[in-house]
Amino acid sequence: MHGPAPAMLVLLPSVAELSMRCLLVADLHYSLPQLDWVAQAAHRYDVTILAGDLLDLASMVDFEAQILVAQRYVRKIAASTRLILSSGNHDLDAPGPDGEKIAAWFGDLAEDGVVLDGGSLVQGDTLFTVCPWWDGPATRERIEAQIAADALRRPARWIWVHHAPPKESPVSWTGKASLGDPELAAWIERYAPDIVLSGHVHQSPFVRDGSWADRIGSTWVFNAGHQYGAPPAHIVIDTQVGQALWISAMGLQAVALDQPLERPIAPLPRMPEWFMATLEAGPTPA
Ligand SMILES: [Zn+2]
Image (cartoon, rainbow, N blue to C red; front, top):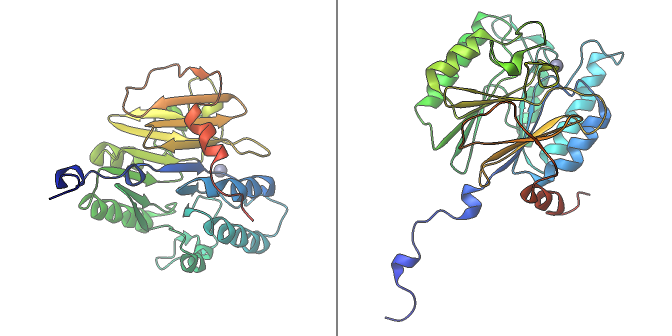
């Protein structure tokens, strides 16, 4: 009859279970300095998301050679973090079962624990649904089925990874037009995921009326944008702190995930404390 009352000990999820720190980058377009940066930064994050266009169809480097090098980077990154890799339009190398192009070179990486197109990841109280680039109706229908299936087991937080951002959003605005995906916009309206992680429209965060963050209903949508050199423009999400932080050549901005989105998003004068702790934490990678 000694010791603390049992009620003191039960059932509160630990901070470790609730806390998840994610790194989002996309559109690296076979930039080796950016791949090197991700490879050395990824160990600080529970989950790292490469949301499409790892390769570059317009590069001088032979596409097959790009694939071999990219696979090596992906394996290296996957050794230090939980890695999600979704395809973008620059990643498609071969026809899939329906004759539509897919990132067939992703296939081997499943053995390295990478969560790929069509896959999902449960991390704590969060479900990630990882969508391929859809190059035709068959792949689009597979995404629809994938989302519908994951909706049935939706936990506290549901995050989609989808290279193209939704149409008619600041995160898909080029400065002249929206290059977003109307289908994704409809799926967001229907299922209201908590967060959608995308890329694809490189200039959105850097042009007037564009942004790295948007809110569609209750859904947060992010696109870090593209810049040259290392580090790539990137977004860090911390579920415990409840913030998404955008880091780019434009400086720092953050949004509070449990608050309404207010525009313009104010720049931060300095790195937030919680993020400084991230930078200092963790072992130095080999
Ligand atoms: Zn791109």
